[in-house]
Length: 446
Image (cartoon, rainbow, N blue to C red):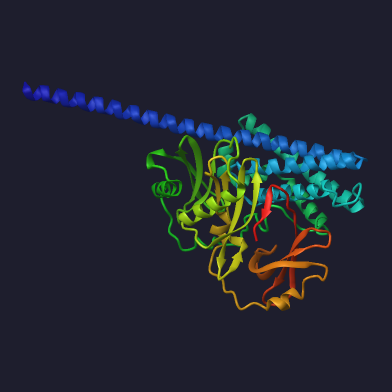
């Protein structure tokens, strides 16, 4: 009889334990689903905003072409510049990858730069024939982008596809935007006669030079190891990190989120090597309490504490109440631009709210850098009308996905502007000239 009662009690305890475990499991599944739902809702909002930006870009470009007043043209160009920047920011919030989207982001950046030049009066009076031809080409590309995004937005609203499906299969995004490729080729044909412009710093876009050099030879990690990478990087407890799945593409990654003092952080951790590819913090910074220079110092200290030593800030730009700083590593006092890391600091509390190491993970390696031509020999190739302010050695990416070892000269132009002249450090030949634009939101830190 006693054995029977014992058996009944054991069965009761087991049943209760199973019920409790089932409750915990159901709660965990519910929380995961809710987190994913919130994340995808944020993505949908960003995509809708991007679609709206594209429509307004198209309208502003049409107004620019139809205006006969310099004042109206300047106003339209200022609007184009603002919308292009906003579209880039919204695109950056999306979990997409792929060459076509990189070109789209590049197109938006160049469109913003070009329209800013027009708005600031870099061209006298109304745009002349060459500028009008460029504006027409830009308008056609913007129209193609607007139509493609509108169609894709319609499919999202009808439930035909989801943001997560697009994130996991970049080819579907490229198939959904079929007309932009030819438009981009037309833009590339229209731009060569214009000066190359720098606003966020030279080579601020991630450059893919082929194999992911920094990750080469590193073993693959599992999801648990990726979680620990987030714990170490963000300084949060393991219990605050949640899995959001996995994304494929150029660099396969685990998608993870973490709660840091009530702020939701989203991470991509590379499957190969378990490195943090990027991090984005949700929410907005309400006010600025720190100076941008303080943000630069905090960003540098953050990189040092995360194992990225010997980094040098190149340029920074204020965006709202945050500052985005570009860092590049030094190899024997040579700045390696392809290996950029971007850190975004909020000016309210000084927290890191954005991190992007794609350029570093794709390109960082030890380079064979022979003794360069002398400064005097290289300086002789700088145009006579330019006044050299400073110089340094740098590795820069080329259009053909290669690298070039150069002397970089920061110069004053006769018109009062600034430019960067690159002279090949091996041959002494002029390699590239870039114009530098600065305003109160962006500072050169050479």
